[in-house]
Each structure stands twice: as C-alpha cells, then as structure tokens.
Image 1: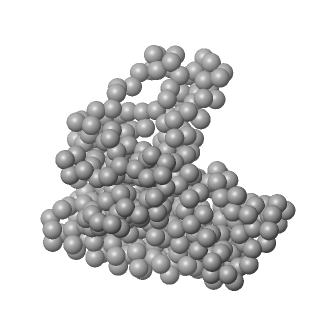
Image 2: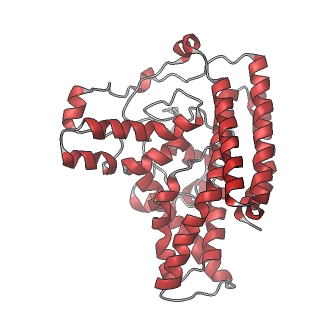
Image 3: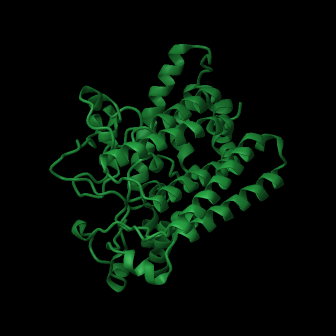
Length: 369
C-alpha cells in the first residue's frame, strides 16, 4: 500500500471527526468554524497531497540515497525496539525542523501556510504546505546515517504527522499530567497564537518534553485568550496566494535592498527581519494585537452550497487519483493534479468576496510575519 493510499483511507476518519467537532461546536455555541475558512484549509490539505505525488519521491529518495551510501549500520526493520527508538528520534528531529520553520524566513515562507487560518479546529490540521519538501528532508538525514531503514523512517514520519491531527481543536481542555509530557490541544493552541507571550512556542510533534528541555514551552493561560493566525494576515481564500504570500514579501525586500549581504540575510534571518534601508523606504506598521480582526466576509447560501458541492467533487476526484496514481503515467497524473488545483482555485475564488465586500471584512493590521 502506498502512502497516498493510506491518506485516502484516513480521509473518511478526518471528515467524520470534523463533523463531530462541528456538532459539538454548535451545541456549545463556540463558533470555531467558518465555512469559507474550513474549505480553504481542507483545500490546502488536498493540494499538499497532490503535490506529494511528485515530491514524496524526492523526500524518500534523498533519505534512501544517504541510507545506502552513508549508513554506519543497517538496523533491523523487524525490531520493535528500533521502531520505538526511531519514532522518538524522528519526533526529536521534528522539533528542530519545526523550530527552524519558525525562525528561518525561507522555511517560514513554506510553513506559514499551516498558520494562516484565523480559526483553530480540526480542519486547520489539514492545512498543510506544498513547498516544505525542499528543506524538510535534510533534518531527518541523521536517521539515515544511523541506519534506520527507509520503510521505518516513512512509517514513523506518517505516525508523527497523523498524531498531530487531533490536537487542533478548542473542544478539548487541559489534560493534566498528559499536557506535561505530550503535545496536546492546550499546548498546540499556544503554538498557533500570535500573542507576544505565546509566539514561537511549543514546537513538539508528539512529545512536548523537547520544548521543556530547550526552553520553548509556555502553558496556555486563561487570563490571555489566544488569537490565531499570522501577524501578516492572509486575507484570502486563494490557495495559490496562500503559498506565495510570504515568498512574495521576502522577494520584494530582497529586490529593494541596496546591500548584497542583506539580500541574502532576508532569506535566512528570522521572520519579520528587514534590511534597514528597505524598512526606512517601505515602512510597515508594528503589529498590534488589539487591532486584529477575523477575516470573515459574508458568504451567500447559494454560493456556500455550490462551494461545498464543488469541494466534494474535488475531494472525490483527489481520492481516486491518489489511490490509482502509482498505476498511471506521469503526464496523466500531472494533468489530473493541475486540473484539481484549478478546481480548488475556483472554489477559493467563489468564496472570496468582491472588492466592496472585501473592504467590509478586511480588518486587521498588516505586519511582519
């Protein structure tokens, strides 16, 4: 069974859990779901799986190449102890991968996609970037050098990813001792916050112990409600712009800088860093939490029904493609994937307000990240 087929089998589980969360959300009146935002998040999840049809071979290929030529040992794939050790080691390396994704601008440009939603629910968990494959595999090569077989690496990586689905919810409160050791809904809510005290904290995938060891842990505090999203709001449901927004900002600062060294620093400094000459000529207002406004433009019922119907078509077609992709020729997969990306773009356009409505719903403050 291919990784893509595993995702297809997991899709109904994701949808059922999302439906249950929506039911609980309505019963409690907590209003953590907005249709346009949820469709955008799930659409980006679909897009990430479509891109994985072309990038997964790169991720696993690089790992396998290092394993074949640089492994110090060949560890046995039939050892339960190895699987457990590999999962712990993967989670440790994931912590550093995730932390770098928040502290290096080029990596943040990819990872920001996951944080752009101003809602926090199970659909947010599916909001995954399509461009992280370029650098992410590098963080896991120590496992290949240590002799962890590619199959074990692929499976424990999938387990680590799937675990993180359930922590994207506001319907589960604190869990006592569990919160001390594991990434939990409370701990991960902090991670998605733009509040100053919460910013760039709680990177752990399965274990939160890494954050406690390396000084990045902060507990959720009822006295300071969490505000979700990014400090440079996306204000769009266009899946392509979601991927390009941060890259475009970095490219603009790089282009305008008069210093060759700063043109390089733009990409490797922490998010929000700007060359002094660029910041002076093209200033941006400082982030102000008090001025954050949720982007929630009105969506007519007929438009909403059409968007849901089109997304159901896109989801069904994606499932078929993921299931049969390994039997199809590369050009066939590419044409089908591009068609589905186009359909997702059309759904985003459908749920995007026209200029007048956009101005009505576009509160918030543009900022550095």
